[in-house]
Length: 334
Image (cartoon, rainbow, N blue to C red; front, side, top):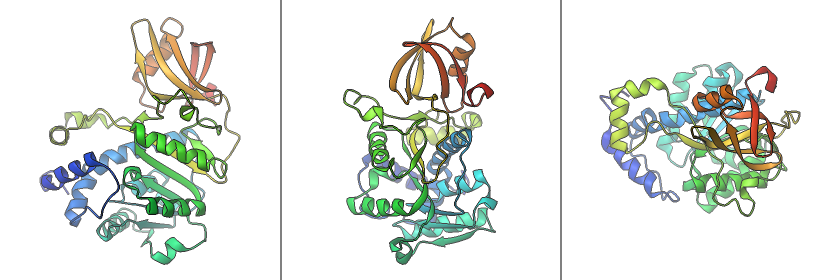
């Protein structure tokens, strides 16, 4: 697929479907060209979200232990391909894909096989989905607003068999809080690897915090802003190319519980004013509205404004004022 062969009518149809939301009433792919057009545009943007999630997992020093991946609700298969590319094709022996659309299964399987010729790629059979044996790493991407009750039940059954779970969704209020509720149901069974820095009950779901939601922003590749094709796509799709909000959940059944207990994860983006920055921080003690006076730590103030890295910090603070902070990627924060 190239910009010259892109099916714009299919992309406009997808946009209407995505804006409408709600459980899918059936496959919305009509052809492999539909999937290729989606994968080249909307799928690539989803890939940028996965890139940021995977960078965060690398900061957390997490890698998948299982050598098998199941990409459930795979669509074009962009999520599994990003995971395999990030950790290295040699890390995995097999990929299984499933989608309610046979066209999507075919496209995802063929795309993965082209990208990773040595990898065994299969499509999930009813017997595989109904079996009881462990299935390894379960990858889930952008399915929340399409899940009918029976599909959710199926997915929960697969999670019971998973060694680890990586789940990425749009950064909307509704999707984030639904994913947070899933976390609450699963945190006794799995270690919460990310985005949380703790395994306690989610403070965002506590009474009084209804206006908040756990979401973050992925940085698009800077070169797209000078690419007239991406600019045209953004205009026709009604998308702000600068904004890639997402939420996610990383779970591991046998994870390392020895991670630092005093780290905090910023929610959303900091707000910057001339003399200070204001931010929402989540750690093992709960949510906190904090302020960083610029004069307290000018370098940190500048870093928070400019960094593209996941916002995970160890604070030194006095009440609601931040005195200084170290990012997780700095030696002092490890």
